Image (cartoon, rainbow, N blue to C red; front, side, top):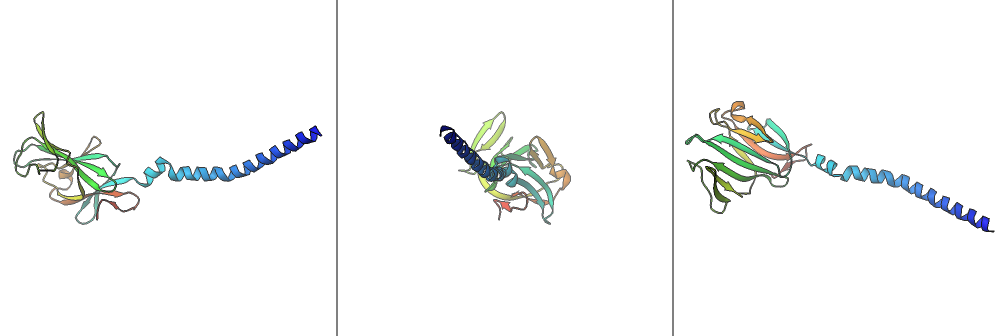
Length: 186
């Protein structure tokens, strides 16, 4: 009788293990697919952003992958005092382009501070307007002559726009890659 009870318990255990394996065969693919769909790497790949610089005719001059929170700078030479001006922008998935700060050597023509838009700080001979955080979404820029040297600075790279397309108006905006629409525009 005890042997029959042990045999019965063993059979019950085999039935339970068999049932678990059947469920596991169904569960493993579901877990695997869920991981692929919801993993951070996949979500980031689906939601990767592009910084677009587009000419007036709609042709794309530059399409550069960017990440939310990443920054880029436009540098140019001021026409009056002939010193560099830096405008620092941030990338936001929903708001598009945000102007973060600007800095220059002196308040010249067209340079200044709008009250309530950031704070003015002098550091090492530069005037900074920090903490601007103004959502632009997109903006237009007329690229100056080579002497103005409009330059895109991003990730240690310098792209000299004035050498590529002087005297051309361009639109800068952020869009999601893979045709998912514009971020912070229109």
